[in-house]
Length: 252
Image 1 (cartoon, one colour):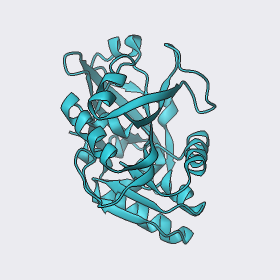
Image 2: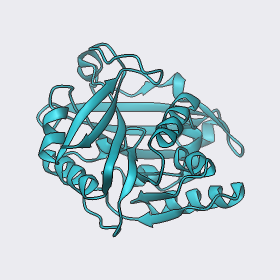
Image 3: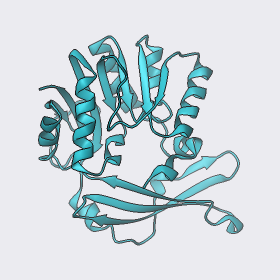
Image 4: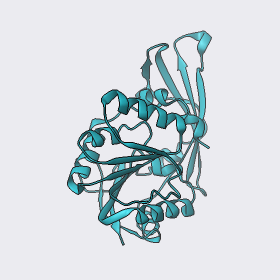
């Protein structure tokens, strides 16, 4: 499982800082829809806090207490008011509906089973106001990358970051791919330049792949339909070689 990966919220933010194009896309979607916004798997609030600062009524649902605590700290620091709820995106009841529900940054891929994904979509459907939309992003699986998931530890130079206490932190990842489950099971190693602190953190991370043709069916089983799918944050149409599946959905 991947809970340990999210137990250090500040480490997560340094590893995956907010990407401006993604934040801008979700802010624009919130402005286009108007009204209230629910984010599932909201993490430390990198998307939701800017949306709330634009004047939208926002709720963030997150399973990890550590991530929620950091989200609250960041919101307080910016003077932004919104509600944080600890909960599981597979089954929740907030007693209200929303004009926009978002699931950003591959958060949906922590649900490995088809039934888990359908349960999530059904929960979203129950929380959509009339005319409401679900918008989410997941990566577009690459057969070549999955074939290279051979369990060998490799340096990810694109993920290196600077820690204020440790200096430069390098990230190595060893992945294997379970084709039957469509799940990549990885071990992430965080190390510094200091030989005495070779691996400062070692954590597992398991992420599902959702292939383009199965996605509309999963949504349909959850009472939703895919109305648009983009291949990048600028709104380019989705193609087979796109890195991301950026999906806009409505109630079926």
